[in-house]
Length: 193
Image (cartoon, rainbow, N blue to C red; front, side):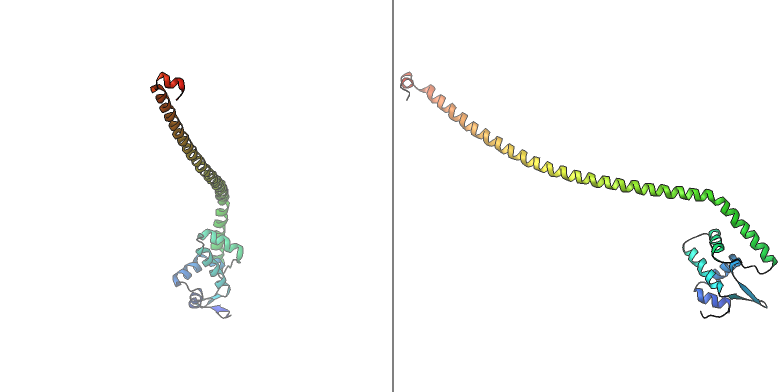
């Protein structure tokens, strides 16, 4: 948009690239911040109107409600009063914004409490995650130890089986020798043959 001094509704709609109805609603809802000049029955808008509408668009994109937008616009842009009727409407709207903001400390305290709670929950979640990671490490170490113990146990079982087998063979050999000794005659026993 060039640096013209005054703009028609069509110029503003083209500049904002929004539906005409949206721009019209915003111009009506936030009229106290919109600098207007009348040329007969025609309204012409000053350059600052584009800045105000862009700010409104930004706030609406962030899903900020109308009352909060009013409050934010009040902080950023001057209030424009065209005539006495407009002055009364602006005063009423400002009183409403002010009374809404007086009621908001409870809401703000609630929001702060919610934010603190969320932060605390996030900290607790981080601690739990760290504890779970530590527990996973411990489980991995125990699983590793378990594998070692299982391998040692299997080795011991093999040794026990080998020893049992050797003892069984020795036992069988001794048993056979005793049987053979038993079957010998007294004379063979005497001669130890």
